[in-house]
Length: 282
Image (cartoon, rainbow, N blue to C red):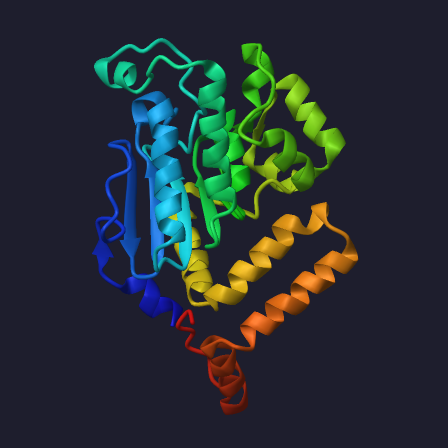
């Protein structure tokens, strides 16, 4: 099933969805949707309009038939965060409308939520730099695969800024409060092996193997039961904010939903028949 999903014809975008931004590319191959930030000359640093493009893109994906999402950067880097430098061309100038900074930050917050709360499993594929908001974007995904040459930094302090893109909430949950403070206060750049030691990434692979490794995991996720996986994602995302009793109640309600689906019935039949289930998403 996974191989069939991965090998289906590549489509240019989600059918019926408008192009979110010229530098945000969305492609669908079967049940797997890939979102690529494509501004390599600025290491994929995002303008306000690009954040909006990501936000709208993920909202479209949430309502699509996609069953797994890969979030990546073009040109050998993941994302250098927000483009806070001078607008040195017409494209960048047009992407920075005159609005109060706090309005931009609230728009970015909506982008964080669109990625984090996407009901599909999201894999961040990190090559090169993931710094500032780019680091936060990787953390907003469900899992992170990176190359051996990946570099991560909460660079905010070096720019005279405090944390944003949800990093103050996301990172301590991933690596603990003390290590998160160390990265936040110093702005240190860490490599892939240190990121793995801290638990920031799931797996580190050679740069030439990164695409294949992520494709394999995405195909595995896309072959799974979408409704059950969406439930589990929500349970895990909410786990630190609710009591054990509330978690147990949510799990009970979730299983009530699952047992009413075709996919759970198919899984039970497949178990008895000693074969792999073929999940259809309903």
